[in-house]
Amino acid sequence: MKLLQKMVCLFLSLALMFGASALAETAPAETLFTPGTYEASSQGMFVAIKVQITVSDTAITNVIIDATGETPELGGIAAGKLAEAILLAQTPNVDTVSGATVSSKAIIAAATEALVAAGADIAVLDANRRDVGGEDTPKGEKEVTTDVVVVGAGGAGMAAAIMLHQAGKDFVILEKMPYAGGNTTKATGGMNAAETHYQKEQGIEDSKALFAADTMKGGHALNDPQLVATMANLSSDAIDWLDTIGAALPKISFSGGASVNRIHAPEDGSGVGSYLVDRFSAKLAELGVEILFNTKATELLTDAEGKISGVKAEGEDANYTFHCKAVILATGGFGANEEMYTQYRPDLKGTVTTNAPGATGDGIVMAQALGADLVDIEQIQLHPTVEQTTSMLITESVRGDGAILVNQGGLRFTNELLTRDAVSAAELEQEGQYAYIIFDQNLRDHLKAIEKYVKAELTVQADTIEGLAEQLGIDGTVLAKTLADWNECVKNQRDPEFGRSTGMNADLTTAPYYAIKIAPGIHHTMGGVKIDTAAQVINTEGQPIAGLFAAGEVTGGVHGGNRLGGNAVADIVIFGRIAAQSAIDYIK
Ligand code: ADP
Image 1 (cartoon, rainbow, N blue to C red):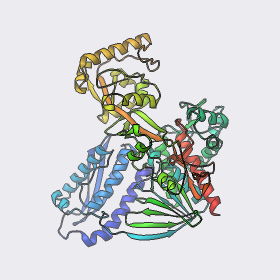
Image 2 (cartoon, helix red, strand yellow):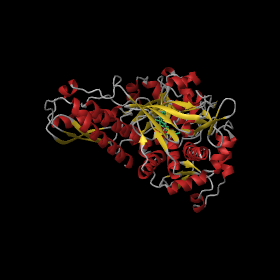
Image 3 (cartoon, rainbow, N blue to C red):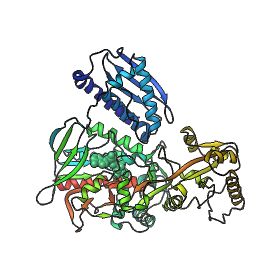
Image 4 (cartoon, rainbow, N blue to C red):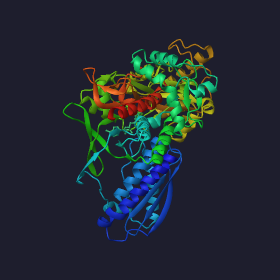
C-alpha cells in the first residue's frame, strides 16, 4: 500500500508538471472536457481497478490508478506506467504493459469510461495524441558530481542506498524503470539467516557454519566458499539491521535445502520481496532520498589509471554524466534478456521468463567493458510451471498436492516432483515444449493458491476427463487412461514408470477436472560478475577494479549451480550492505 501511495505521489507530481507547463504550450485550444474529476472501474486480473481522472476544459491534468489487490508486478506496474502514459499521450488509448495485459486493458477501459463521462470524444483525443518524450524530442545534457552512484533500485541497490545515507555520504541512485523493486518484488519465501535473535527467541539451534555448509551443498559446491561464508557470517547482523529500518522478518520456517528452520519472513505472511521493497522505499522516502527513475545507466567511466570516475545514463528528458568516485552495480540479473541468456545457454532459446522487465544484464555488460570477470554465467534456474501468457508461476504445491503433468499427446512424461531443472528439461523435450498441469476439484478445495489461477482465467475446466481433453485438443481416451493409470499409482503408492514417490496422497477422481497450460520459465540467473568478499568487482586478471562494487543478482558465486530458497534475499541484503560499506571505506 505504501508503494502504491508512492506511485500516486509520483503521478501527482507528473500531473502538476504537465498540467502547469508542457500542456500550456501545446494543448489544443478547443474545449475537450467538462472540467472536474471523474471515476470509473473495470475488472482486472483479480480485482476491479479504479481510475480517477481530473480534467480541465482542454487537458487531462491528473490520473490516479488504484490497483490495490492486483499483484505488484501486474497491477502495480501497469498502474504506474499507464497513469504516466495517459497523462503524456492525453488519450486513454496507450500501449498495454507486456506481461500485464489484463490489468492494462482494465485500466484503459476504466480511463475511457471516465473520460467519456467527462464529455470527451475519444476519437478527437486520439487524433490529438501527444508524443511527449518520444524518439524525436531533443534531450538536454546534465552533469552531476557526487561521491557514489548506485545503479539499480531493487533490493540490493536500495539496501546500499540506505546504508550510504546513514553514513552521511553524497550519492545518487538510478533506476531505469519508472518504479523500484526489480526481481526482488517477486521473492515470496523469506531470507535465510543463522544465529539470529529470532531463532534464539524461538528456541531454534542453528550455526553460521551450518548455513554455509547447506548453501554449498545446495549449490552443488560450485559456489565461492568465501562469499558463502561471508553471507552466513553477516546474516544475523543483517536481520538486526532490517529490524532497525522497519523491515523486521520475525517469522521463521523451513525451506528446502536447510538443515534447520532458517528462513525469516514478514510477520503478516506477505511475500518477502514486495514487503522489503515497500519498507526500503518507505525508508528512503523518510530519509529524503529520491530515486532517479526512468534513468538507465549505459556506461561506466574510468580515469587514466583505470579507477572509476563516473557513469553515463539516459534519462527521460536528459542524458546524464555523473562524475563520482565509486559505483555500486545493483542492476540484477539477465533473465529478461533472451538474446543474452541464449548466448550463454542456447538450449534456452524461446523460454519465457518470470523476471521483471528490467533484468536485462546491463550491469554485467557495463562491468565487462571494464574487464570484469564473470563466474557461473551459464547457471540459470528454470521454473517448470509457468503460465506463458501471464508469466505467472503455478506454485510447486499444486504438484506437491497431487497434480500431474501431461503433454499434448495426453501422456505423462516425467516424475513431476524432480528438481526444477529436471522437470523443465523434460517439458522442453515434449512436442511444442509445453505441458498441461492436471488436477481435480478435491485438490482445488485443499489449495488456496488455485483460486488465484481460476480467477485469472488460467484454468480450463470440465465435468469429465473427456470434456477436458476435448478443450485441450487431446485424445479423450488417452487422457482418461493416463488419469486411470495415475490413480492406480496413487492407490499402490508406486509409480513404476517414472518413480514418483511424493505428492501421492490423493488421487484425481473428483470432478470437475482442471488443466493449466504451462512451460518452463527463466527464474533466476545465478552467475554474474565476479566479486570478492568486500563486493569489489574483480577483473579477468584477478585484480579489483578500483571503485567498482557490485551486489545481488548481477554477481555470481554466491549460489553456485543452484540457488536455495531464501538465499536470494540474503544475498541482496547482505552484499548490498557490504558494497555500501566498501564504497564508504574506498571514498574516504
Ligand atoms: P537485486 O535482487 O540484485 O537487487 P533486482 O532485479 O531486484 O536485483 O533489481 C535490479 C534493478 O536494477 C531493477 O529495478 C532494474 O530495473 C534496475 N536496472 C537494471 N539495469 C539498469 C540500468 N542500466 N540502469 C538503471 N537501473 C537498472
